[in-house]
Length: 323
Image 1 (cartoon, rainbow, N blue to C red):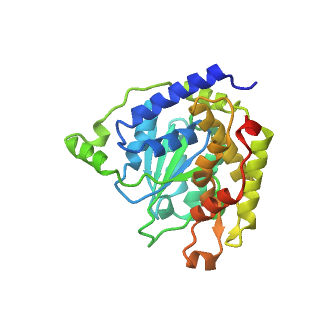
Image 2 (cartoon, helix red, strand yellow):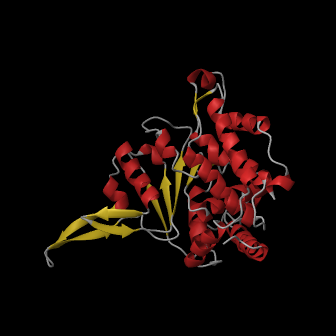
Image 3 (cartoon, one colour):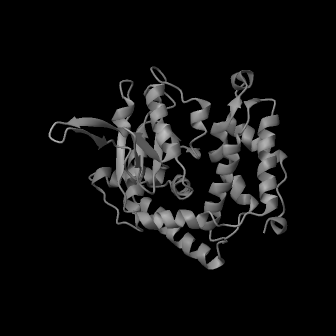
């Protein structure tokens, strides 16, 4: 079944209300909020690379409140163990059996703060849950909440004592974005409300968690023309052929671009994907999946600049072809 124009209009209305609600907490960050909800409704996870104090925790909490869900924050440190995230089995003397105590991963929105400060073993435990959507302990499978999204953060400034995420693990994040500092006008509004702390603000829920699951399923029915698939395939090939890239975008990355484009199209009130959807999402979805040639990196080439050039060099299908 393919999404109808009426369903697309309803989807866009709910999406706009979700974004507007979170904008009350994260002022002046319309784009990153839209990207966050696009990731959520695409069934993916979000990586935020940003300096401290830009509102990452507030964003995660506000998204959870908007969808009447739960949120947990985990501060990643070198001594954090996998069980501190997933949970542990503890022997109960009264029952004579082991009882599983759930970890903070059992929430709708999980903020993994400074994920690169934990050991690779702990990082792998989190990323396994992200991929499988469940935890197996003592032979018993425990599914995580639905909807479920991990918002992981990295500090690009302080790299001492950190463990860089391997490319295979970066590939599991559907998007990478940055909140950044607010503009002048937004800063003034934040200062005017300095008497209220961010964690004291409670947003009214816009939809239920179950509705989010249904919206995500509906987004998957957005129509994608064969010319759009061809366009994405040519973009992916372009990243692999670039002389500045040692490892291009994977098939998982191509699938992620199509999935998020479907959600963005519905968020814009359309029941079909157009080339502009692909262009808008290309950097956020693809750039963090590239492995640049060391010499190119030394010369100042960035993954975003490679994606921008590939977009210029790859002609999109006409709107008539894609519609």
